[in-house]
Length: 368
Ligand code: GAL
Image (cartoon, rainbow, N blue to C red; front, side, top):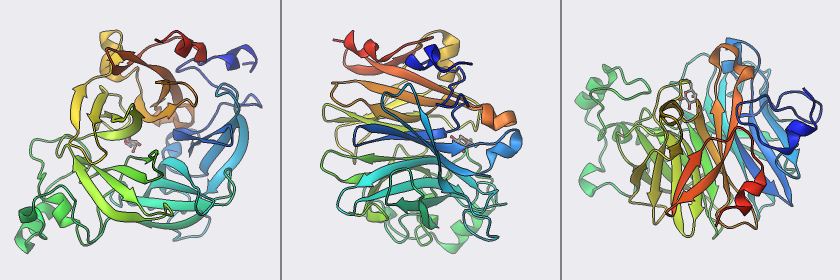
């Protein structure tokens, strides 16, 4: 496939070649705009089912225009050292990078599962670099907010679980998806001392410079929004639970005219499901569900265009111009997962997402 014509537009779901003609390898990604250049960070996946584990690391590409991407190499490499938290063969997903102006550092957060333990770790990994493309140095992996109660639970719920309730929970099969009984008032209390579970995640820097880590917690049943410290390297000690027991994951966050939004998905692993739009007037909520933002055929709406949200990219200098980024996973041949980038449209002020076979940024000139 040549790079010329194909690379002056977005073709959702099609192979997207980089500057050398190699398919872009940046899954579950996010984009950082820095000094007028876009940087796309994502999971480097290898072929086959082995690609569902991290064998290489986080790949980064740069672009002046969002269509053409230059391979800038591996920003964060997995480690060859046995026992390293990011040892190759671990699970390292949904990396996101933000810039901390006071320290001049680029800070990467990701979902990390230590090698060989499935998704039971539910850790957040942090890495840092002096240059946007890296190399990023691994700092630590941990469960966030150990010893901190969520800011939005009543005082009566701010107590650790009794041993008998802990024992009862230990007997329950609490996988990662919706189930008939979900102990939605118990899991954050169980995890108080050791830190909260953190799986699918994103980062957001607000206009006032404060940053937030948004992650699927409590066995994926409840999202947490957690403020970051001034250097963006740790939780600041304030977080809230969002829509407990609703099983939202794959959060992709954006802000329009002072209102906060998330596109999320249901929890069905690699299989696509209907997206959800969540909104709030303040970061801390209350958050409300506005329904499915996808427009199109029943099949497209039911599967989010056969994809799952990962990021919403605001375009600088344009009002209300956002690109919805999603992954069309291919767990049997992970490297062949595809990217679905679509423009966000506003219908009666509500952000919606419609299918485009092929489109470019002029789309936003037509919006009023
Ligand atoms: C999805 C999640 C992905 C990955 C996958 C594993 O629900 O969004 O990032 O964790 O499950 O099955």
